[in-house]
Amino acid sequence: MKEFQIRTLWGILFVIVLTGAILLGPYTFALLFIILSVFILSEFYTLAIQSGYSPQFLPGLLTGGFIFILSFLLVNEAIPVKSLFTFLSILFLFPVYELFRKKETPIVNIAITGFGILYVSVPLSILNFLVFPGINGKMGYDYSLLISLFVFIWASDSGAYLFGVKFGRHRLFERISPKKSWEGFIGGLLTAIVSGWILSLIFPQYSFSFMVLIAIATVIAGTLGDLVESMIKRSVGVKDSGRFMPGHGGLLDRFDSLLLASPMVFFILQFLP
Image 1 (cartoon, rainbow, N blue to C red):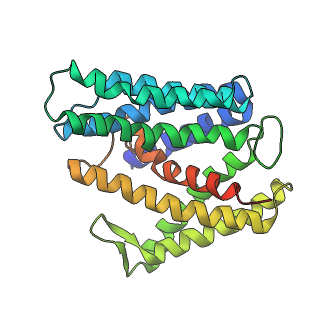
Image 2: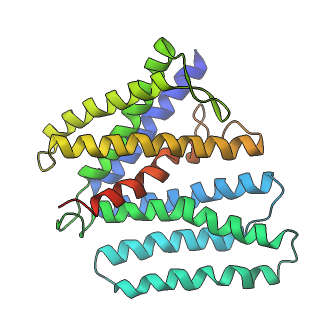
């Protein structure tokens, strides 16, 4: 019972801090997600270290934070688009830096460092493009789509758990996550679609059909994101990515769905009028 109370308390605190920072404005949003980008990437690199590899920890974290700041400035038109090439230039410094480390498996170390940035930092940086100018011609800070993404993820998780416990018979991806079922996935999808209908009433600038599309994309990509993180943890032999949140594991555990959902939603938005 005590463990359930701790888990519930931290879950409520997590939602309050996350939504509060997003709702307060662009600078609290940016500050929170810069911090999250660094901490989540550090958990990923720690998993790699536990596997016996040596990613470039500090350079990777600095680059991850820099990418988010770069994206923040770009969408606010504070810097030109060509500034993005700065990020590409930094990536080429990783092989040079590895020359002076004298570590084993240098190719793997470089690859893990770069992949961590692509896996964690880039998706979180894409969130800037969802809340700032450039999306559907809107100007200014608009948190509605980002809040909707989190609602879809949370609703899907809750629906998948409830439907999975009640009706789960057919395993979704037993080799990676034995507890996930197709029934749970469908239940989570339906729950997210219902949430999309409610959100279309709260945010009338988005139609119900638009919200359904984003909900479906978020659930599919989010489920794959959860499975990818489970695969990574299983390869290391750990249950949680960290201990940042008692009863919930690490921050990577909490944001694994968003890491694939964010690029997917951004991709879809490029083809909508």
